[in-house]
Amino acid sequence: MFNFWGSKDQQGQSRPPPEVSSSSSQQQQQQPWYSPSLVSSPSSSSRPQTSGQIPAHVSPGEAAGIITFLKDKSVDELRKLLSDKDAYQQFLLSLDQVKIQNNIKEELRRETLQLARENLEKEPQIMELRNQCRIIRTTELAAAQEKLNELERQKEEILKFYSPGSLLNKLQEAMNQVDEESEALQEKFLEEKIDTAAFVQKYKKLRTIYHRRALIHLAAKTSTIG
Image 1: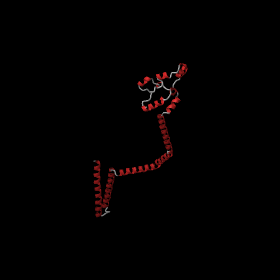
Image 2: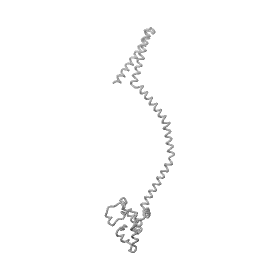
Image 3: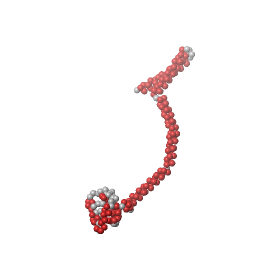
Image 4: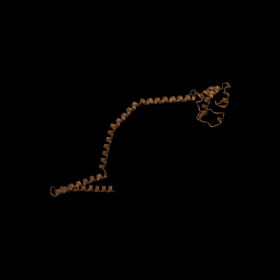
């Protein structure tokens, strides 16, 4: 099994001879760019997974693929990955998983740009439609609203004209008119301006109309009150 770099066994194998101890001390003094928690000890395999290890959402197959890439590298190359950001970035971008993600990201970016271009191309058409809506609101809509208001006014007048109270008043006015006509006819008869036969015929007709209307008025008024 491949031993991760930084373990005690690997450090023992890679310790340089005593005559180059100055070179080793310089490497030890070089501060790595990564977090020390990224380097695990041999006993770390029995501990719970930490943030410096492979995330839990990485599948075992993907983790095995990454380990395969690292397995063929020398100790110096592994140390360079830990100490050189550019080398680590280059290695990261060479992974198939990262390439796939980058391709998806680039495809989404192109699709977003295409949608943005299509929206910009439709902007004149949208502005034209907005202008048409504004014209409709200021002209046709205003005329239609005025016509609607006129119809509403006519409806109110018709309802008011044919309301029970209005009809009773009109019937009362018709009764009074017939009553006045019969009284005027009676005065003509007293003044001998009309003969008896004509007076009786006309007066009977007027009084019949008056009483018929009076009965209707009384029935309607009683029905309305009830």
